[in-house]
Amino acid sequence: MSLQEQVKEIKQSFRQLMDGATAQSMRDKGVQYKLNWGASIPMLREKAEELGKNYQLAIALWKEDVRECKILATMLMPPDEVLPEVIDIWMEQMPSQEMAEQASFNLFQHLPFAPAKAYEWMASDKELYQLCGFLVITRLFMNGQEPNERGINEYIDQLEVALQGPSLAVRKAALQSVQRFSDLGLVYERLAQSALKRANLDIL
Image (tube, rainbow, N blue to C red):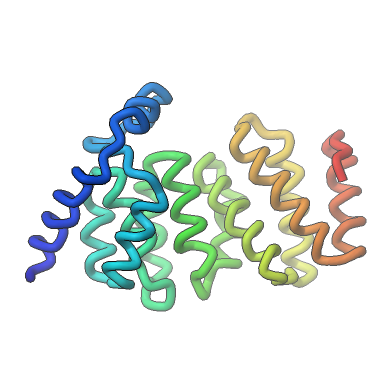
């Protein structure tokens, strides 16, 4: 079966997963795709398991302006095969907060160059980039990855900026990240408390 045929077949399979209420609720929140079947994430995860990791298919699915295709692309992309340049293109085309969350969870946190991208995105002036940056760094901290001294300083700087920034989604992701940062040990906890104090937040 050719790649085009495979993409067509996958798109047709979404009809069975359709959830009109979910799709409508997303449209009401201003999330616009050319097509949105409202399929649930567990259903898409099942589909991804059935298909297996596939670089070419992930690339082809991401190009479709269909919510389910893009989410599936983040699940099918093999993290060890994808180049930073491809991730940069996907970031430029990131359509929504939901997609940023899905891409960070399904793919970005597993990239061999995840830490470098997380720091780069946290320092961006674009909301979805910042969101991905904090979501990815949270997962890295959760997996016990400790930043070096330069990483710590950079993270604390971006954290303070984000906590006082205008985006609620970014602030929430930043707060989650600082809780995971604190879990890395006593030194980290103290650094986090100082940063939160400077941002007039006392939550730890």
